[in-house]
Image (tube, rainbow, N blue to C red; front, side, top):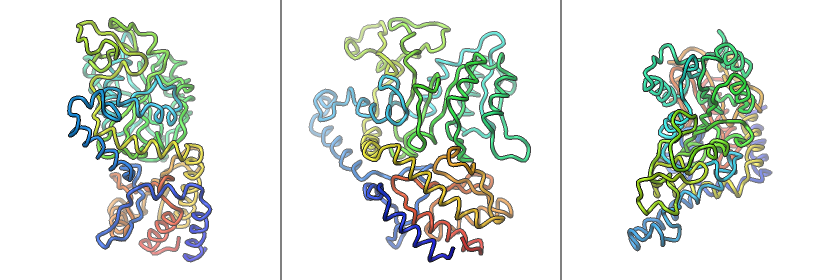
Length: 435
């Protein structure tokens, strides 16, 4: 297909796209000349919802107008502020409202979950993660292992792809759990692997972990707002995520946690549960609201996931997420996923025309990936980096992951088929090929 035909095809798809109007609800980055760039880095930082500015201004006005009384008398009172996020997060994670909580950041939440659910005892002392896990996850689990007086070198199991492969299959995960099951206390796995873009069957992995007697936790940083989730039915013991990628919550946005009802309800509300998995590290904001401000020494936990809160929510960090979740609710995850598949399939088709100059690490099957392609350029890391830099110079914003991967994410809320066509054509021009 010629360049003109590809571009015409993309514009026809955009004209027929039922979600095309949502692009106008985001601030679109521009170059120094004021022209819109092709932004394909929503897996790193999502775009700003235009409504976020107004909502932030409202909170600043409330602070100026009410000061401390804003905690109870603002238009969105600050004491229960996290409740503004509950319905949207429950919908996107396939959870019940009492099972999700917006709080802290991803790694802080991961530490809190590991404090509750990683309880090494007897032979069962190890944690299983993927080789090449996101650095914050690896740092967190290694330090938790060391915190318990154990050596990460011998108590951290890292599962790598088979030699010559880019991906770890669910079958390989099941085999590793079966092999080491009586030694594994906890499995921590991503919903979508950040480097490759591979999406996993969470329920299948959770079944394997539980069959071996292991606790199952998920990092959903690259999943939430990207792929459909059904955490309540998945069997997960906990999950954590950040909100600055696909959720468009802004840099350093408030993160979130999922704790299923079965764990929240199993804990005593008035005392700690010792070595029982799920026992909480307590903080003031996890205390039940009715008696929280009596300042009594006895901790009385709030119901559900709210009991895991430590501190009051950062209002100015949480506010942009309110704006973004409203957009998600208007668009609907079913429609977003359908467009995501179409966009990523279109990108996959264009990039594969450039083989063997490129190699796509991401699975070819739509069901096994989110809205991301991870691309390795033939000729080594130095050439790959040069291609990435050339894309940026031509107004195409992707993401570089050491040592040699270009990640491009066509996000259905604000990316168009025309963006994908321009990416393919620009990459082809840099490589001296026609996409």
